[in-house]
Image (cartoon, rainbow, N blue to C red; front, top):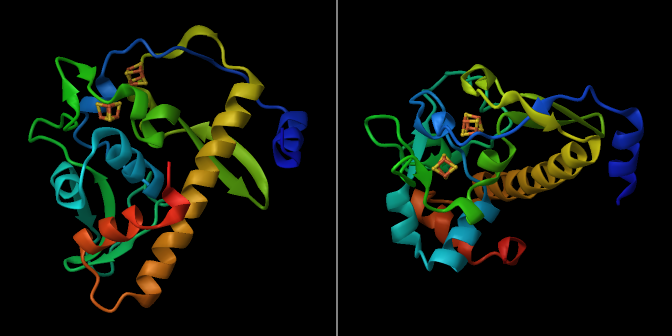
Length: 201
Ligand code: SF4
Ligand code: SF4
């Protein structure tokens, strides 16, 4: 276990009970944007054999209006330059609000689902070098909170450290993309992810 992980463990956390009861609510909500990171994209590509154009069809780029503020819940996710403006990369949703990978209320890609799906309803932040956890702003839709046994500190710490590492690498990549790419396009961003060794899985 890393030093950071040990420190976070020593500080302790208020334990909660949680068990995913597989209701699918978080996969169906219109207002819940399922953001994806570079590692998520690379995993989809290596496991499902998806090319950049195929990935593009499974994704949406949510454009932030000029002078708009980031919606709550997306503030830790990097904004990317695209041909349509600054956008967040997320899984496509059907008009009903269903995630594109939801079928018969089951996740079709469960073993390789995005990190944000693995961590929901928890969220993690690095505050002055210290890992903090809390609940998603959409926590009220989740009937699994309060069910099952207590989530151990170790589980939270391990999940949080992995989530923050994932976001950090993706954030650095997105920043470099925004700073250096002359003609940013969504497909170009996906191609750049697939050719970057940091996302090799
Ligand atoms: S809303 Fe909560 S209980 Fe329902 S599928 Fe999502 S994480 Fe599991
Ligand atoms: S990827 Fe799977 S777990 Fe995540 S929102 Fe879509 S259907 Fe739900």
